[in-house]
Image (cartoon, rainbow, N blue to C red; front, side, top):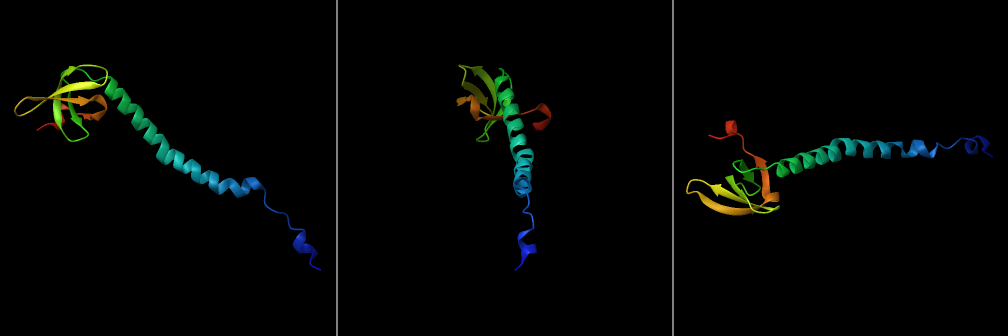
Length: 102
């Protein structure tokens, strides 16, 4: 009865998955790649910590590294009373530069 209706070709499966693949590519380039790059930079910074570096912990404590006791613990000297605290290396969130201090 309607032969032209049945003769229309269906789009290929690749064209149907193209929007989904495009969304995954956008998520990868906008979210996952920068997160991986940030994680690598954080690991490099943690590996390069030395005595005398001024660091900030994830809890907001700013202190100077006095000793690196083992592979995963640091001793920080915190001002104003020069209190020494022991923190895990992974708790360090960033290095504090001299121009960032007041």
